[in-house]
Image (cartoon, rainbow, N blue to C red; front, side, top):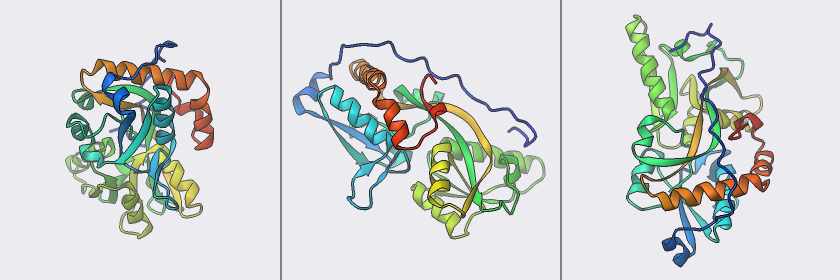
Length: 270
């Protein structure tokens, strides 16, 4: 794990955009039923969360997959999923595709194929004023930290905790929950010293809770996020690629970044 003094952003190069295509065709089994069943962990604003007024899923990811489904002549039906089992549920055919701020890594590529659509980093949320001066993961030794299960942030915290104990320092005291909203509530209730999550989630809660939270340090480890399809399902993968390209080239992609107040640097190919 990098020390605080290192200003290195362990970023991956943005995925290469897909070439323009007009060959928009949904897989035959979807054409017959007319719907695209989408799994999403709807506790992760601003990408996917529940509108308290309507009870319906909303967010950048929800709008994007809805627009993509429309390009294929389908209606997107977004169903709430548990993030830590979401790819297993995809492979069990509970969903046709999954969009849920899933960072693409080697472990996940063994379970699914992905269409990159977003660039996201990781960041810490701390109480206003950062009373414990938490600026990077090595500062977390001995601290209480909230994190969502099944995430790459949990993996990183486990690695850092081992590094802490290996250096003769106390490990990180982790509270691991399935619901990202509940993770943030831990900080609100002063039950943890920090939370660790994708950077768009940090940005969202800093805006929604002005004067209550700060970011701890800077954004690290920028990686692509992807729409997941079952491994080897080439017809679905091709359909998702074509639909994403159509939505991106048609201007909807850019308009959704504006609508959800996302950073332009998080665009694929930016």
